[in-house]
Length: 199
Ligand code: MN
Image 1: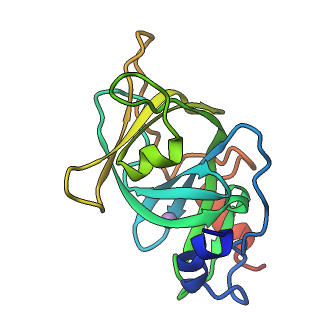
Image 2 (image 1 turned 90 degrees about the vertical axis):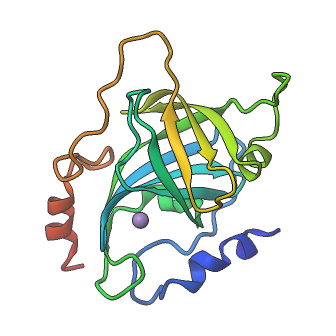
């Protein structure tokens, strides 16, 4: 499937004459795959968790955000694939448009795919997602360590995002999204909303 087909849902939901979100053209660079976590103050305040798989960002809406505490099981609801350039997107999606509201880039970086089969042999990361269970180690500015995304049995719309316990000090969960700052610009949602609304 080409990039254009994979982004059909993404393109179908947006009017690029009205939103500054990227259309998506960039090809995969062949370097370490990227991840990004955005905070999105739309109809409901949520986090968007995205992992690069080939030339798109596979995406989940995570209402409470990723937690660094292995005891937290965070619901993650799949959303449409996004273009790779979406990692850079921070700003205001106009009211009335799909996803209207303010977006900040809370964290980004690279990840190591760690998915394996029941015998411990490495498997293709994209395939492991299709089968409903993927493991990866995040190297972000804020998020570090191994996480797993696992689909609920028999339910395509519900996944869990969970940090693996790794013997080090336990993490502290997720900060308040209204106080959290962009890893790109240091700004809060309110600051981006106030500064970008006039654009
Ligand atoms: Mn969102």
